[in-house]
Image (cartoon, rainbow, N blue to C red):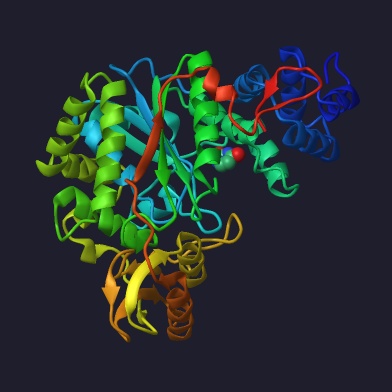
Length: 461
Ligand code: URA
């Protein structure tokens, strides 16, 4: 560690002292080149998790991680390049709708996505349910595709922000993932390295999300918007509800089919899903300069969706990445599960809640997700929700369907799905978007969980 001893850095954070930018750069460089052993990195992470980081420290960490590997240069692409990121939820297929809307408006998007882990799904797994589709494009190929097609959705390159890869792996095994500044720095370092000018964030709040409640999601949203403002990227963050799954489908091919139905207008699309897609797209259209007011952006997003231009862009994107573009109009061409079983209501009543976390877990057990990175997944497996909060059901009526490759597993899954449904008095429903954070400000650092430690600057915990 050039000029800085690891023990000094660990002790400084342990005692609640603020790091200098130089100390953080030295730390990240020692993480990236492997010269700092795992036990010392883990000790620093725990100190940072407990003591928190100031905005200046979080920003320095983000920028040092951004600079720890390659950075995409999108300047050759015309226009304002817009990216989108969701912090992950259950049934979240919005990228498959939002990116084509932006492309249809001429707003270029090069989106790097991840795989699902635990009870949340990942866009890459969903896309790879499309027969033939490739996500392992080189950055040159992805940039070329954006020039030709308007958008590309590819795998997160390991060459971008490699220091985050090592830090995240250690956080995962040291109970230090749930730290607002560490999460914010991790996400934003990769987004900044991916080179877009602007970013729409969807920060999920609730049982199906990484952030369990609205205040913690707002805190994360504020931290990321503040980093963007300091790092020269325009960032707008929606805080959105993730108590229950988004839409009716959870599972890779099932979610692609649902997203395609939203794009083509086939069937009876879920209102909250459509509303969220339109709002996120509208924000991207504004950031990308395709509309100036919120009302104009919403109208444009709806027009591109309802006029079929967005569906046409998804077809072009799938074809460009080697996938069968016919799936957009013919979801029967997607992988189909061999077995299905129905979860039925044990008694009559009104659905009060559908527990997103439990539905995500059941979908995972059916093979739609993975417990560990590298586990194989079944693209056809998943859950279809037939009843939602507020729906009345009679005893024995279907609530949901479990789909998978084994008759025994789908039967067990159907039983578990029944317990994901709670009957009773539904809570009053708020809109899917709980609020927006669009500007960085002092409020970003004066939330309830901010602590003052030893007279040092305010810290995000
Ligand atoms: N996603 C990331 O990329 N990083 C985190 O720390 C958490 C979620």
